[in-house]
Amino acid sequence: MRLMSLLGNLPRSPRLVYLTLIAGSSLLAIVPQETAKAQSQTLAAECNQFATVVGQNQQIMASFNAEIEAFSQNASQAETLEDIQAAARQYVEAVNGVIENLDTLVDDLNVLSLSDEPLSSYRNQYSAVVEGFNESLMIAAEAMNGVAEAESEEVLPERVETLQTDTVGAVEQIQQLAAEETDIIQNVNTHCGVES
Image (cartoon, rainbow, N blue to C red; front, side):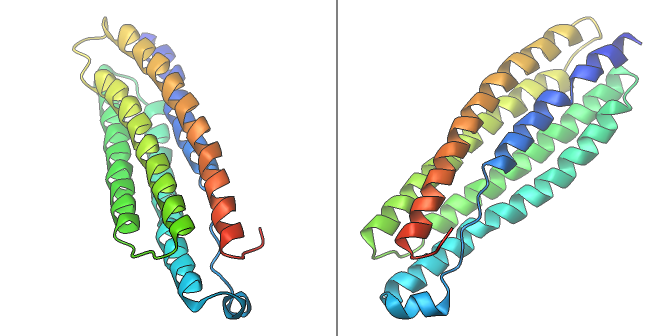
């Protein structure tokens, strides 16, 4: 019973990290052909390449959502320390997976050959935001790993408290980064001639 009351608080913070992250995930439009004619073909092609890579974020977040849903389900049904540890490990694996995917997204952005200086600057800004997301996610994963490695029921309350404290900081950072991401995407859309 004691484990269930601790667990009742457990899924909220990690879930909030996900919801905050997905809320910041803005769509970047592909430049329509009519607009491309009015702009340089090079800029239109570069904008489309940028949009395609950034669009990977939607797929990454959809996959992460499915994994977090499974974590939430397992966590809500946990009755023993082992159940809680298994759910915590599942969360850590999901977060580590999204971190790897976002690292790949940054790598894909960085290999884009962009001759347009403003677009190149937006790419660098977007990469920095994604790297910030990863730093925040690492904090949340590390805190959850403390729950996964709890040696006994006695240390679990302290680990859950650490998780909640660290996750609040991560969520605040993600919210700030999400606002920056939205601004970058709006600026890219404007620069590329896409109406929002």
